[in-house]
Image 1 (tube, rainbow, N blue to C red):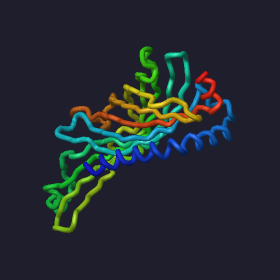
Image 2 (image 1 turned 30 degrees about the horizontal axis):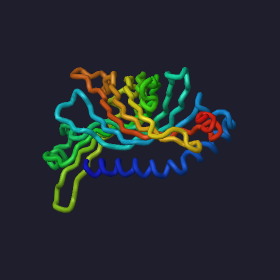
Image 3 (image 1 turned 135 degrees about the horizontal axis):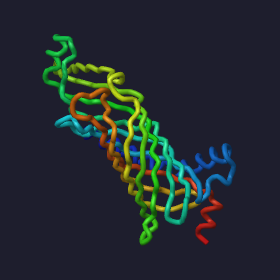
Image 4 (image 1 turned 90 degrees about the vertical axis):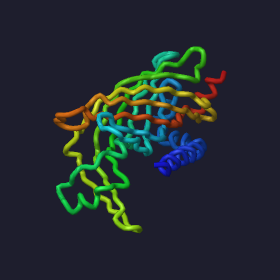
Length: 251
């Protein structure tokens, strides 16, 4: 888990450095090809977003967070000087939990080998589509808060159990449980954003802290306690605003 955490932080830092020098130009080229030069303005622009997920599941006792990476794209639509609508498409958004309880596999020999697992996890992968209404705080325009609904589409679901059977050999058992879970999940997101710097030669960098509360039981026809996703995210986004527009904003 510690290695995953360190890897997430290192990856985010590397992406921030790399993207600051290249992502805006790449986005600019794509946007100009698809929509023309006028699409990337302060009233409507796209961003790339990358960060870390700290996910857990409520309804299952004694679990720990599952750490992984998120990635996607956002569109920012200016409604007024203070309000923005931000739909997002996050094709990479892992959730689930680690240290889930061991359960029987209906194979007595395998169950015996897995009696004292060294690692267990429920690995859920989703496509997240949140729509956030963002409000810029008057006293500090670099800070904004936001909230909105989210729909999530389950793409894969696996329970993983790992046990050490020899000093140099691990046994790993994985089970596909997607058929046991609901494909569509609804939730609500709460977002805090700080703009580290605004458009500078067409580039910018924003830092996000977000909490997502799952509202849907992930388990189909669950007779027991509801099992819902709970997700913390730290992300950076790289908005593209055209260089001409950035110059106009400074005037």
